[in-house]
Length: 252
Image (tube, rainbow, N blue to C red; front, side, top):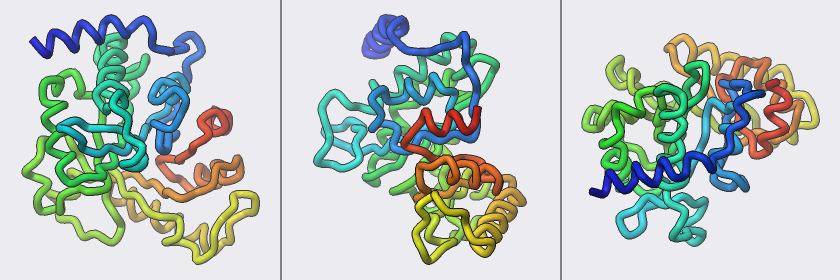
């Protein structure tokens, strides 16, 4: 009964979602940082063809809630309504793919509570087949690598360069993320070029990640055209931004 309710709601919402398919361009390296803070969560990034979209989630009253801080939780801002249901609509519109042209999307879900992983797994269970072309990558309060096998393979994990993975656990880690401060002792305002030393450190990081057939991301980078262009040139697989239009213009 509950599942039929959500399907009905899904279809009702479908016509209201924004998707400029006529001038659509897929931008696989574009990552919408803290996407839920956008005026149009999910849909803005989708309309620009972003390959990766990020949401922070907390657990409250048995529901996954989307917010940057626990104090900012609002009853209507659930992961189910803001991300899962709209994604399912897009999948049904594009023959099982998130985007036209059989392009995929990564949802980077930052778990703020340890128990969120079980709730997310249960939430996705009824839609597992439909979500085959969506990559759910978990960061934050994630299990230890030796416990990855306890979770459904619909879930994968955001890794760290300081963590040692076996061949088996690495298979569940499609993404390695690092803080920009791991490469530089000084802040970068994105208006000045990086030093050659910092660039070489980032290149080495990307090379090592790619050697293991994983993708590389750096967080804590500025929202400037120079920063986006630099990260693109250095080979980062995902370039994060809070200014989606600005990044889309660089990656046009």
